[in-house]
Amino acid sequence: MTPIFLGSTLLLLLGLGNRPEHATLATLFSGGDSTQVVAFLDFLKSGEDAATADEGFEVEHGGHWPDGRLLQFLDSTVTFFDVNGDTSWFEAADAINARVKRRSGPAFTMFVHLGHIYGQPYPQYSRLSYERAGSRLIVSVADWYRLTFVRRGSKLLLTKLEYLTLEDH
Image 1 (cartoon, rainbow, N blue to C red):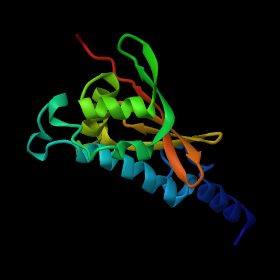
Image 2 (image 1 turned 60 degrees about the vertical axis):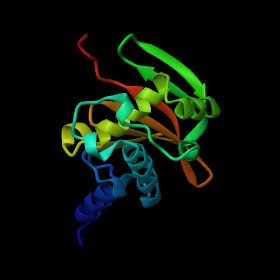
Image 3 (image 1 turned 180 degrees about the vertical axis):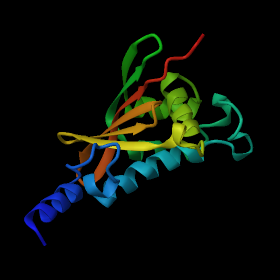
């Protein structure tokens, strides 16, 4: 093999020859990272009533998750951001769990909505792109959401959830 071909192959394998959104997940992150991200999103999606999944978003149709199971995906504190109103807030994982049990609050609604969006079988909703930012993994769900994960031991835990779509009111 020529040195140019070897260098190009190495860049491609490392994901440096592509923009992150065009590189395959395997070139940028370990298979375990992608598995954990998809497991989280599949978990959120699984809470939606299958009979209403292809209807418009209604918070009461989602968030039917096993008690306490969401906690396994969350860092001790999660930062939330909603571009509508330009609001940011922090919630401890235990407080999020309590809101999930009560099925109320903006964090609960955001998780249910993210599951609904990811569950849509069209790339403009569910396409995933990945970016490494230091020790953090940033995952975009199309143009709708940006999720930031941090590594804690062998696990990736959600530390930030950002809703990026401006809504017409």
